[in-house]
Image 1 (cartoon, one colour):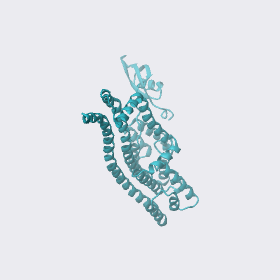
Image 2 (image 1 turned 120 degrees about the vertical axis):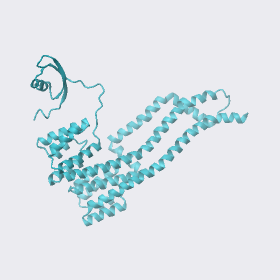
Image 3 (image 1 turned 45 degrees about the horizontal axis):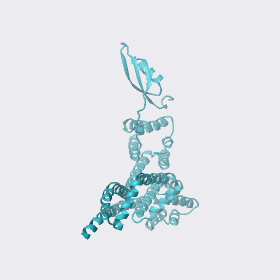
Image 4 (image 1 turned 90 degrees about the horizontal axis):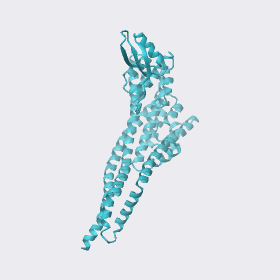
Length: 405
């Protein structure tokens, strides 16, 4: 068992078979001694055993959220069919084509075979199994409904991933407009405008104001283009890093985005859908509402709603009704509050939260379509106006000369 838990490595070996012929090959093992023992059992006398060098450029595979969703559904199906957890995970590990996923599943299987609970084994991989996932698996193990809970997790993660994808695609349009506009402007300023500038020098007349402005901008771009590119793209990179690392900056940016027309409405609906979907899933699994809210705060996808969820948790802990605590944040629409209030009164909170989540997920679809229909003509008008202005500025002196003649 001790050997099985060691990290496997690939070794290349050279040896001689029973007839004295030189043979060579590769073998996965925890250490060279293990390789030699295997070769001797095969009738090969080892001469050289070396660890296979790593390639100069190695691209590590990543575990995606979709991989975890598929794993949850497959494990649910196999457990419901009566296959033991360790055997099911081993089967999926062997069949998976993602090396990173295979390695993680192997570690989980080894922990389960060593006598640990599945939830404890998953908790060792927090990057892929968050607190919510581990809590639901633990609840399933305690109640004997692990297959049902894993299926519920798969549905939950699929729906959450769908919302993330839609919000991501909606955010891509404005970002694309800004980047494309900068690149197009830089190309025109650095390569196109100088050609016209050489032509203007032979006119011997004052240039129109718009043309002078564009020419001065072109000269500035030519002199400092490297610094401008570094500042522009470096600023985007640093802002993205700060958003991930700094909670204060994340709150500020998320708060600003929520106030944007159309975009803010989309982000609000997505956050409400995540809040209700996560809370409904946790509550339906038998997780106490206070513990459920602790997991919900990290699943809303928005720092403003995350902070509000923590405040809701404090109020509920002190004995306040969930609907009253939600209303105090002023972040939830009246329809959501009415549904949650009805759910608390009738004991159907899980169903009400699921219905609200379904409704707002549909609203996110509509909001993305609306944003796309608004952004596309804006891109055309903005880029057309930008390029058109530069073209007009370049041809104004020519028109001026033609009018003088």
